[in-house]
Length: 349
Length: 80
Image 1 (cartoon, one colour):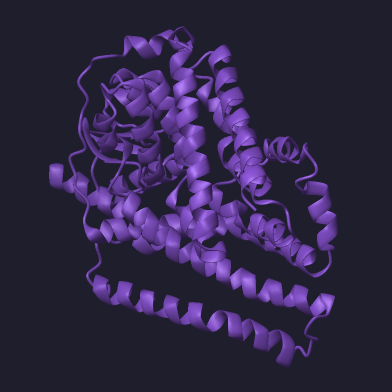
Image 2 (cartoon, one colour; image 1 turned 90 degrees about the vertical axis):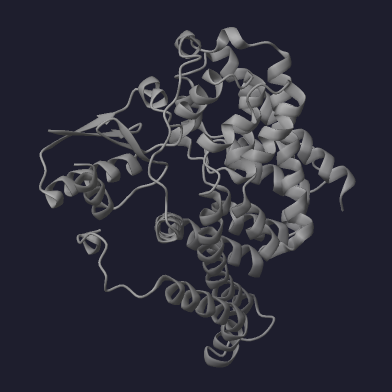
């Protein structure tokens, strides 16, 4: 942080040069990463192809750089794009819509609008006071942390478009259904009174516009913070993944969490409640579980639950909504996730 | 005397912004009071929904991002 002590130093390289070099370096690393990991494991370390230990080490060496590359590249790019759709700007799109079109729009907008659970309260108040219906507000609150482009692009890069689109469809369905149910139940009286008292005041606008350098700088500093925070979890997650990959018999994971076990979906959702991470952090575990034959529905339910059901966020939301509404919110989201998990297990092989 | 308000819940990002704001005051060499606004009602009343937000002399200059001390110092000396 001390490096930026001078205002706007002129000695920096031109922006296109920096961005271009970074992009080329990223692409080169992406292309050589997998062969390099293989070569290191089997030629340099001399481990045997097909041995438990060799396969586990290869998985670790190949996946850690791969996930790190995907994370840094994609999060930077996506944060840059998201910067153009702050909640202050998308809110007018949701004001005065009916519950059904509003919930669909809110879930969709939730995908591209950045959301940090520490902003949940001002965001909630801001939506409600501007006249966004309660159900529509919740559709946004459910979709935004759960279905975001980071999760989508990571899933796409690691598992292909099928699973990425399945996750998106599942998340949007839970968010829209949640918004519709909460809207229909007429729970407005369980919103703290002071929120309503704020309605109908004029709001200020932000007076400084951002340059591309600002936006790129923001995206890069966000990515650095995120990767630093996630790195220990990634190492542990991929480490566990490597162990599962090399050692755990496929039959064991598949039979414990398999289709034949009807409790698997609710159990993974319960397991996920104390775990909170953003979507990107769940990827290595998801990768390991899918690789060992856990059905898609169970895996997606786990990922959705980790991102959407978060105790700290509930504590924060309690400041604007009363317990009955909070309970309905939690109930609707968990039921939705479990239902989606079951449906995927039933119909997708 | 200038007023700088940091809008936020006290989250790590908000504290980083507050630190940057204090550093900016020193850099710009102005007299300013730095206040941390945590009441969500007051935050929303400034038109900000994504925290942390930054207000200089009643004017919202940023929301949902952490401007560097250098940027804040520039704003401080521009609007002075």
